[in-house]
Image (cartoon, rainbow, N blue to C red; front, side, top):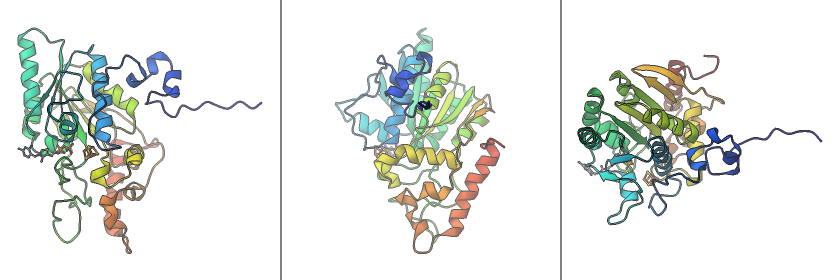
Length: 331
Ligand SMILES: Cc1ncc(C[n+]2csc(CCOP(=O)(O)OP(=O)(O)O)c2C)c(N)n1
Ligand code: SF4
């Protein structure tokens, strides 16, 4: 009988594929001792990328820190769906900061732990892209500049979702939001605006910066684990599709996240002390149209007359990322 190579498709979940891997290669989620830091019973939408990303990130951080983790959480979906007072889905010491000061609250906690001689307790700050790239940006930059011993995790769903989908400075060009008025005659966000916080974090020369995606949960766990092994200010920016805000099918969350990576629109890389040290190359290059078509926020680009001009501009952004970060094997 012809031999067939066994393929492990689901290596990021608690599945047979995961348990068949060598013990050291199994994900944190494959282990029955995982902490379930963000437990069941929360109220995230079906297919929420932020809930998935947070679960993997915080469980990995807990494992790396011997379960000695405190988290400060900015206002936003992650905070609201996990802690409708007096309930909570968190199984870690967890503080709800203001919308804009999670980084400052975390810096304060880290300073207090240092004074008390309890530096084995590690501190994480987390928030959405609005809380990170907009209102919390000053506190975050201060945390970077002082090199405070905090890991900041941004869950980037590319808009302010908790309050009904407004644009943030991480909302991509041409993406329509529910309640932010278009600027100019074309719907959606304008081109040549926005902010790339991973690159800005790198410009602070902090010890570690990484981007990650729920499309690759093993890679996400690896980067969180690595960040927890470093002292000083660290930043991880995780791409987390939002079915409600993006107008996508809940079952497509991972597929869409993967397409963002494989198109070049969301490059995965690591940087240490201001220099890029690693990047994930693209396995199968995806035209941006395939990614955009799965999301109603871009539906206006595919009317009776496709908006070829704006589609070309988005493709040019992906192509630029591919060249800049060297995302193709031959690059
Ligand atoms: C100072 C202040 N302004 C506005 C709000 C209202 N508010 C709460 S959460 C939120 C949006 C959060 O968006 P984001 O940080 O992107 O997180 P997401 O909900 O998308 O995960 C806003 C505008 C607030 N709580 N505080
Ligand atoms: S609105 Fe988006 S980010 Fe918020 S819980 Fe729903 S899917 Fe998650």
